[in-house]
Amino acid sequence: MAKPETTDRRVAVFDLDGTLADTSADLIAAANATFAEAGRPGPLDLLADRSLAFAGGRAMLREGFARLDGMVEPAQVDRLYPRLLALYGQGLRVETELYEGAEAALRSLGAAGWILAVCTNKPHALAARLLEALGLGGRFAALLGADTLDVRKPDPRHLLETVARAGGRAGRAVLVGDTATDREAARAAGMPCVLVGFGPEGAAVARLEPEAVLEHYDALPALLDRLLPRDGGGWSGRRESNPRL
Image (cartoon, rainbow, N blue to C red; front, side):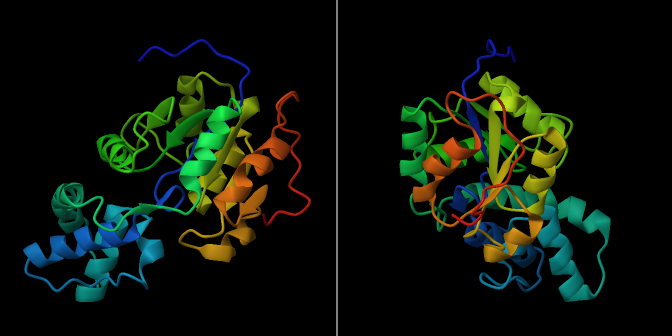
């Protein structure tokens, strides 16, 4: 894929699951359905296992087998993983919704000249379908999934390539995410990171020391302007004076 000409416009890169949308219920439903097809009772709980859902399909299968059998056989996980993805693809928008204020924040950022992109560890095709179902199909200049490259977050190359394909440069980009995976990717890429305080870990993300913790999407445009001013240079390396916004 040819990369666009690099500009000095600011780039806001978003994780998807747990950041833009709460996908946990549909992910857990797919995992439990996978176990049910294999003749096993669904071991995952819609509320207690929200954080596990955002760790990915293989993580849900491993934890499920550990609970059911007290052990995990990698071959079983590998065998059932494609079926989990297929079942998830059949119901990826049953319960999933954007977080409150997310769509309005994206519109505001776009109107202010930000380039928007998505860097997710969800398979690309599923991520594209979900964004379309959520009404965001044409909103992003670049979308890189878990299988777009031969690396994925927290490898910084996944994030840096997303910025490059969006037409930006790392010194004028920021990542909005929800987990340690996003924090590590941003740090390794030399980019500031905002973690949402309403995702799977809630307020506990503050322990990861991101540049800021976002409490509601209404605050995001002003927060990003402070981290990366429109007429400024690159990121200063400083955290927000009030990191919870």
